[in-house]
Length: 406
Image (spheres, rainbow, N blue to C red):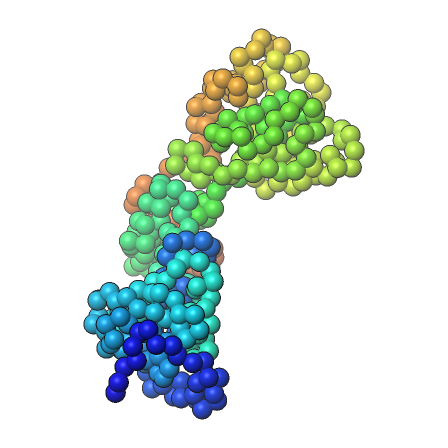
């Protein structure tokens, strides 16, 4: 059959015609379920990538959605060959087309949401199922492998990415298989499982930062300290108490570990309803933080509120700020306090080391098995409970489920 020239325009009339829609459905039923997923993140970008399955016949159906510069139909393009062309009937988009496998196509287009939306709309109108890339990967590779890839895509630092990549490369799977192989010797299997189980909370921090809340009475330099730790001015610094009235967060990395630091409202007897609300939000954040960093101004005499805060947060890491100024606390300074100056930077390295040692008391290696999703942690928990009641069959079922599907 003849193939229309790339410069030609196609009409949407056929798409609106019920007979054409039925023809597209028949094409789909003969070639497998056509699906498409966006592989690149949403938002502004130079290029967006879509992955299509069983969709070549849909692209070639009259009027064709894809028109290649080499004039060949989509289904006749050579596997692995990169082809330039246009996509769509209404305001065609320039695209780069590549058949990765017999029934797998990648489309690369302009990275803006509008261009992607038009392509997905045209495909949806022809009966192509639009799905999330995680759904597509789960169906292709299994849920466990998809979780590893999803976590790797969300890794905020190189150090966390390396640990996730190790799990994706078989470290976690091998460790779980060793637990299964140890059964029915439940005591040994339980020990092996416990070694994996104890890293579950750490695993959640490979994709989401540890949360550190800074607390102290007003005007002790909390905002200056968070700016010094972050390396830029994230919080407003002003010498009037009550300047910070909401929880201001900044994300950074300490020694390769992702950390969210929160500058909270100074805690004191509230001067008004707005400041009181800020302090309520501060306490809400601090209640769920992985670490509380308490700051006091060592250049000013201690106040009752300082002692109250030390009692309220007994496990807090204490920073004695403004160590570049004369010490007004003297022998009353907590012995474990880290001496710092947000102004000069003195002591910041030691403070960072102390924060890291609190958040990551034990550093995993590249061979440490770490659950990296909530589902993996929950499934390991089910296996752990089964072993506690000597239910070997239930334990094996849970462990195998973790490595395959949800």
